[in-house]
Length: 461
Image (cartoon, rainbow, N blue to C red; front, side, top):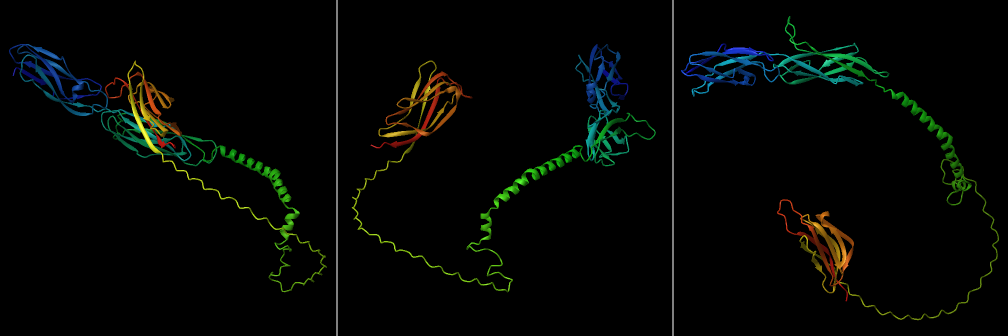
C-alpha cells in the first residue's frame, strides 16, 4: 500500500460551542505524486471538518492535517463518547482508502430555564400555578423545587418537589398556594411568593448553574362578595315597597269587593234551606245532642175558598179531511263516473346552438277523456344554458324557465291544470350554450327532459 495515515491520539474531548483539533499524519509511500481527500465518518461528521480538505504529496513525503471538532451548544448533541473515522482517499490511485479511527468525548453542559404559569392567580380558597422547567443542556438533569412565601399568611407546596428532565425536553410541577386564614369579607389580600428551581449539588461544591428564581402573586378573594350588602339592602327596600303597595292599594280593594259581594239575596239564600224553611241546628228535627222535644205549632186556620165560575165549554167543529198528496215519481239514479287513472309521461328534447328552438310532446290526451295535470318535473343534467317553455291544453304557456338556473326542478299543483280531450303537453327548448358534465365528453347539443304526472278521467257524454 502506498498510503499511511494515523492520528496523533486515539481520543479527544470536545467542549460544546468550542473548537478542538486533532492532528492526522499522512505519508505517501508510493513512487508518484498523489493527491488525497478526506471524509469524516460517524455521528460527529455533521460538526467535524478536516483542514485542508485535500492534500498533495510527493513520493516519500509526509504532512499533517488538522481534524477539527465543533460540537454545537444545544441538546441535539448528547454528552458522551462517540466513535469516528477519517477516510483518506487517493484521487489517482485506485487502492483502498486508509481509515484511521478514534473517539471524541462531548463534554456535558448545563443550561436551565424555568417559567411560572400564570404569574398571578386569584381565588377564595387557594391559588394554582405551574412551574415549567426546560433542560437546554445535553445531559439529563435533576432539579429540586422549593417555594418561599413573602409573608407567613400563606402555605406553599409542590405536587412534585423534584423533576428529572431529559435533554431538550420540559417537565411540569403544580404549585399550590393556600391562605392560612379565611377572608369572609373586605378588601382582597395579595400574597407574594417565590419559586426556586435549582439543580442538586454535591456537598462542598458550587452549583454548575445558578438557581432560577420565579416571582408570583396570589390574590385571596373574600368569601362574601362586595355586592352582597348592597343586594340585601336593595331586597329589603323592594320588600317594603311591595308591602306598602299591598296594604295601601290591593288589600282595600279586596275588602271592598268582598263587602259588595254580601247582598241581602246572598244572606237569604244562605239562611234559607232548599225546602223554603230556615236552616239551623235548633229547629232541625234530626239534630242530635238535645233531649227536649220541640214545641208543636198550632195548625193554620183554613180560609174560605173563593167561588169559581165554571168556564164555558168550547164548541168543537168537525175537522176537514186532509187532501191526499200525489206520490212523487222516483228520480232516475245517475250512473257514477269511472275512477280517475294515475297517468305519467315524459319526453326529452335536444336542440343545437344557433338554430331555432326544438319542441317535443310529452302527453296527448285521447278523445273522450280529460287530463288533470298535478306534477311537473324538469331536468337539465348537462348544465346547459338556454330557455325552456312548457305549454298545455290549447297551447297555453304554463312555465318559462332558464336552463342555467337549475339542474332539477319540480312543481306540484294543489288545483290541477285541466288538459281537454285532444290537448297536448309540450316542451320547447332554445339552446344558447351547451354544458359539460363532470368526467364526461362534451356533448354537441343541449338536452332537457320533462316528466308530467296527474290523473286521466273519462268525460261524461
